[in-house]
Length: 221
Image (cartoon, rainbow, N blue to C red; front, side, top):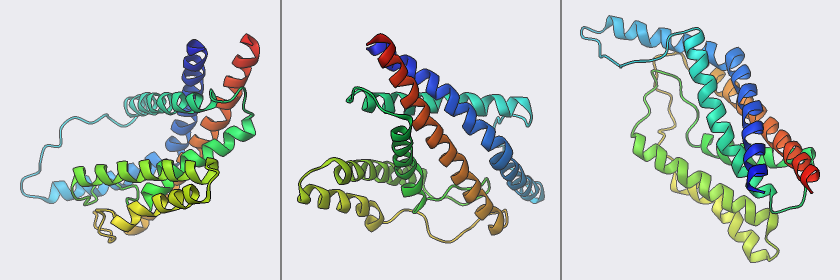
């Protein structure tokens, strides 16, 4: 059973990670490169530029690191999904799509309401504060959504709804105002492109993971 779960997570992570990388290459990376031009120009005009350390070069080096990071992340999420799927005998790709929508809602939509994806050169504030709020939002969103869908008692569903609201009631560390080197219109394009890429990723991950897991389950009984 463990080998089936691991294989399903690895294969689905590879497929969805490549799909995410393809959409990012077409939609997201060009916007990041444009924003980096503004960042570089601002650095050049400073009297003493700061050394920001190593970063991958444009071209195959950047693509390779992006693909490796995406596939690694996708495998981790794939393993989480097959762990959830294993609680049932089998799950259809259509049901997997629903799980993908749930993952997209928990890991992208909910955090983006308070911490939208940011371009290079954007003033972000405290990293620890942003990470803490992101973790709080994802945890509350996952638990809240699970209670709303699976809990049978009304008071548990009400608790789930309350959990969805908690992080946004606390408030994110984002100021709500865009402060960055690139034009705000470019930041809006980046948000849309990132949402599209993540949406494709989660839909592919949910459905492919379900299909592979079900096939392996039927094959091995």
